[in-house]
Image (cartoon, rainbow, N blue to C red):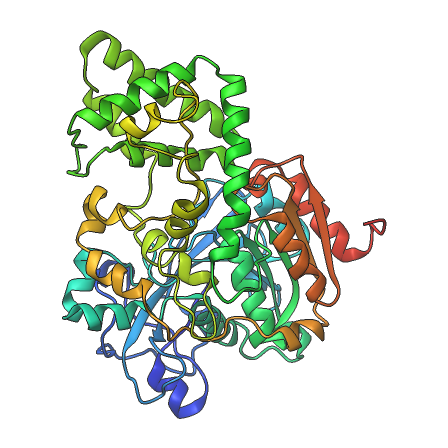
Amino acid sequence: MSIHNLPKSTVAQSGSVQPSSVQPSSVQPSSVQPTTTQPISADIHELDRTDIESYYIPGGKVYERFFDCPLDHQQPADTRQVRVFARHIVPVGKEDQMHSLPFIVYLQGGPGFECSLPSSVKGGWYATAISEGFQLLLVDQRGTGLSAPISAHTLVQHGSTAAQAEYVQHFRADSIVRDCELIRKALCRGRTSAASQKVALLGQSFGGFCITTYLSLFPNSISRALITGGVPPLLDSPDAVYHATYPRMITRNQQYYAKFPRDIARVRTIIEHLNTADVVLPDGGCLTARRFQQLGISFGRTGGFDSVHRLVLRAASDLETAGSLSVSALTEIAAAQSFDTNPLYCIMHESIYCQNGNASRWAAHRVREASFASTFEHQWDRILQRSDPAAPVYFTGESVYPWMLDDYAELRCLKDVALSLAEYTGWGRLYDTGVLAANTVPVAAVSYYNDMFVDVGLSERTAQTIAGCHQWITNEFHHNGLGVSSHVPEYLFRLLKGDITDL
């Protein structure tokens, strides 16, 4: 979902960025360190390097590139760096046009998720972008995938809790965007016109948040921008987000149980069991009732009802036949939850809404306890005390809670860091409303009417703030519409061309 940059020392000296000469096999799991390898000659353009690993997939040739980037773009005296991975895909037959083809940079959803290697670029948004004349750039955002990944294993080397928290504070959208900007300069170096040096942006979910930051910081570097399910709320703290999204979670629960009415009894049986038994997952995490409820995050995606029903049916069948949950069921449930493998999704999730000195302080938890505690109750004795004790037990959605730092094995090791980040009040500004109001970059955005992740009402207000933003609101897709149908990117490109004018 996003893109990143190059060596700090070079930027400080000349304003340019040097690609890393280290091969993928030598990249270490740790991330911040002074550069010890000698960069290749500054005379060699990144696109002309012969030491880059490359291979073909259907429809494109993939180049795997690594870049050394400043940890803190705002502090030239800070010599710490992060190594960022970018997957560059050139359409088959156009390998000799890398210096002239425009780039489209894909910014992945999250925060905390890497870009996957597509098995083919002959379909989906990849094919749409290629048909529009682009070469593709898929970058693992800093902290994810092969880009200085954040985990308990990599953070421990940074010392104290305070030092670890300070390090992670540099992994928000503003840093991601500055990474992208330096990479853009490296890849577009030598192009003769200002227009040819610009890149197009495509952002899914949190990627759209990053695009809005990019529009605020470097609008002159962008040729056009497409946002899918990620027009961000221009807020200073997350509370309003959860006041808007909890009611949407309630609606999705009602729709789920309308489709699978027998799951009412099944889920109640599972919740009762998890309240009375200590269930340990294969990775050492705890499957508590409140963690089981988090499977509802899938309700925000196409096919999510069916995937949750399959897990519910499997778990209920285990309890009926054996009185406990099988290793197979537990493994599948754990695999459906990505907080251990992508811990930034938890520990930095609410910070993406924080600006101007506001701390998140576990906003989803506070709002739930104040306004929705009974609706999303997980304790069995309290469920039985509700006005309708036989009512369905509701799942939760995309929200993070402090108790996750006990229930998830990997997050336990990051508990002190996460608690520190939740109280941090030093978050700077992510969006410049003045710049957005004067925007001249063509922007097309789709917002999903029933989106459980990014509230359409809040998105609509932001779209009205961005001058020239063409917003398409539809109930045809859920949050993952970009990955479900090529109609989404095709429609957005048509909006940018002026082919659709009645919105």
